[in-house]
Amino acid sequence: MWTSVVVGEQLRPFGGTVQTDIDPRSLIGRKAFDRNGTKIGTVDEVYLDDATGVPEWAAVRTGLFSRDAFVPLEPSELVDNTLHVPYDRALIKDAPDFGVGRHLSPEQELQLYHHYGLDLSGPPPAPAPASGDRSFGRVAGQED
Image (cartoon, rainbow, N blue to C red; front, side, top):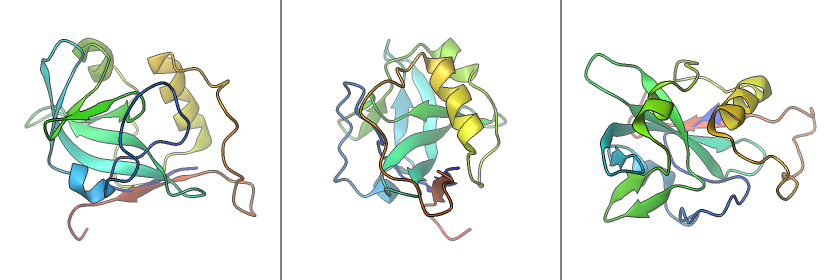
């Protein structure tokens, strides 16, 4: 299970270069662009792994009356104070919609990995909490 944190982080390396030393809250409000340089929206929340505290997902508000779309922070890049996600806008907008402001379950995380075609065979994740339940926590830029 993942706790949402409006911050960007990475859990496992997938070949990207998102900085892990950046304060996840500093990603909130940054513009996000797809692989072609087309604006996706604005980072609304960042989701951290509860066990490691590493940012893995960002929820990007895709429009004034739209929903938030989850995007992987790894292999995304932070360039000129904007988040560049190496996927097409259409794929991002079609990502599973789990709502924001709550934990992502392991099943939801797996759906996101499959949606983006991310390799789950990378290095093993950090040890899970004593309960054996992995979760991502939400980091918000403002008080909820």
